[in-house]
Amino acid sequence: MSDVASTLASLPRVALLHAAESARLQRLVQQHGRRVGAARFVAGESLDECVAVLRKLNDAGLYANTTLLGEAIPDAEGAAVVTAEYEEIIERLVAEKLKANVALKLTHLGLSFDEELAYANVERLVGRAGELGTFLRIDMEQSEYVEVTLRIYERLRDAGHDSVGTVLQSYLYRTADDLERLLPRKPNLRIVKGAYLEPYSIAFPEKADVDRAYLELAERGLREGAYIAVATHDEAVIRKVQAFAAREGIARDRFEFQMLYGVRPGLQRSIAAEGYKVLVASPFGPDWYPYLMRRLAERPANLGFFLKNLVRR
Image (cartoon, rainbow, N blue to C red; front, top):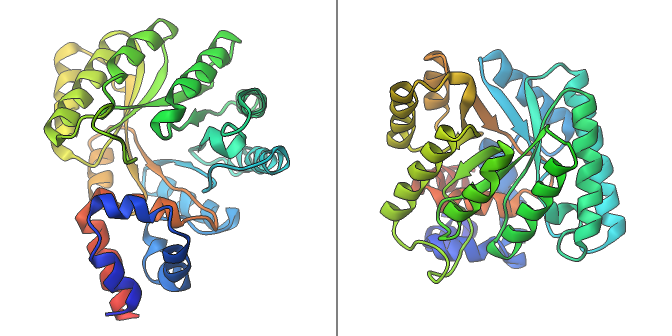
């Protein structure tokens, strides 16, 4: 087994999440990881590579979104570059007539040091998306950014921007209240379980509680007129949402299922074949390492796949 494989195999979930911040391990993994394993979860390092992946997904009956991987840009100049890159991505997806949209992190647009700058940058992109008839979703990040992210989303909606959504994380205790806060705006919300390492003082420590909260959020949002993107690979949760929607008479154009590129592709296709909208989150870019570590931490099967390919190289 390679040094990289041995290191990763010894890491439990919590350590993998810490490893997402490790520059040393990043250097080790990036020597071989993109070629032998990360490509399963990342739709290329360039926009051209990503467009080819998105087209294949569309051809298979799936929708998609994409994200330029990266976060926590440290200065205004860097945030301006990323904003311009995102504008190019939005325009390219529309020009290619892809059934795909953009998701982004506000720290990639300057939120870690200037809320007003981040707002100005994301408003520019949301405005451009609206002009072109497409959509942009603001991803949710670590708990320290939850409040400001919701605040920016509310400002965008109150300014008349409809082509924008955001994300709620079911593992945070606060999220049920956050949903109630957003419901008057008839929001477009992706519900996720949560992929960051958070203390038990603010997040449910037990999976059963996270799952329960997840279903409560999805059902409450659907009942109250929100558009809900059910982002999970948990088939039991998917079936419960389907059953709830059928029982409550909620039309299929009021919700969708979202899954990650490279994770349970067979399930993605089978749910789409049943007549549900399925969107595949397909990020790209050279800064793929932190994203990969979070995907490996989420499911042991992901880590097994990656290690197997490292050993075979």
